Structures are given as C-alpha cells and as structure tokens.
Amino acid sequence: MSDSMATTNESMIWCAKTGELQSLKTLLKEHPGKVNEQMNGRSLLHYAADAGNYDVLKELVDNGANVNSNDKFGLTPLLAAIYEDHTDCVKYLLEQVSVLVCP
Image 1 (cartoon, one colour):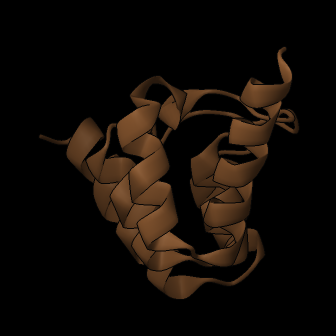
Image 2: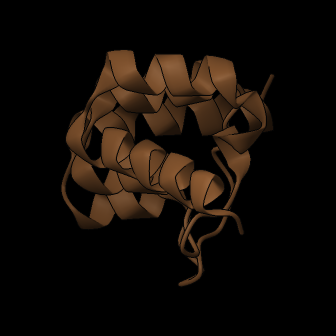
C-alpha cells in the first residue's frame, strides 16, 4: 500500500472514530470505493459503531456501507454497537438490517 493510501485510510478511520462528519464526507466523495474496504481488519462502519458516532454511521450507510459485514473478529457493526452500549446506533442498525431481511 502506498503512503498516500495509508494516509487516506488512517484519515478515514480517524473520522469514523472521532465523529468528524464533514471531513469524512469529503473523503468519501474523493474515495467512494473505500466505504466498504477493510482497514486494519474493520470497515469504517465498524469503527463508527464501536465509537457510537451515529451521524457518521448514518452517512456511511447512506453511501452504501454494508451493515452485515464482518470484521477480523467476526463481528458485525451491529454487534460492535451492542457491545459498547450505543443504543441509538443499535436501533438504527437494527432498522437497516430489518430492511434488508424484510423489504
């Protein structure tokens, strides 16, 4: 991986973890294919769910993030949000999963 790719990935992870929504929107416009990319074994959705960043979570889903993806530990973003007790994220992800299962 090139240094610029690593820097982009690190920036996107940082935004997902810290809730830097505007910066993340900019990065997603520049790199739309990264919305579902595994970065250090987790997707951006996992990082956002783990940190409880609801607005970032919603933005990622709106940009096509896979709510059913597994990270390197076998966890989905929903399980990450449950484990960290982020109820607003849990509720939102449950709604997204039910839309996929029961259209």
